Image 1 (cartoon, rainbow, N blue to C red):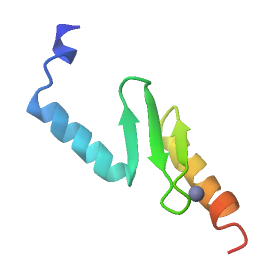
Image 2 (image 1 turned 90 degrees about the vertical axis):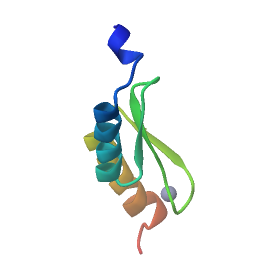
Image 3 (image 1 turned 60 degrees about the vertical axis):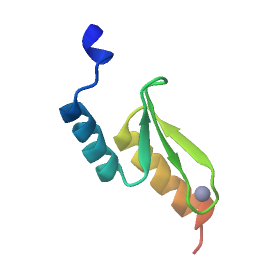
Length: 69
Ligand SMILES: [Zn+2]
């Protein structure tokens, strides 16, 4: 597992691309979870994968932030 300690540039590029595609979602390597800070209410949302986090984010913005809007 020595490789994980030396992070090569292609890996950083990969993470940067992933980050760009996630639209504000950030992967936490230490907890292994994706997190997203809601821009409307500043609440932190967490998900085990980006796909699930996106669902949580959409649900949050529709029902908790912009509910009825
Ligand atoms: Zn919110």
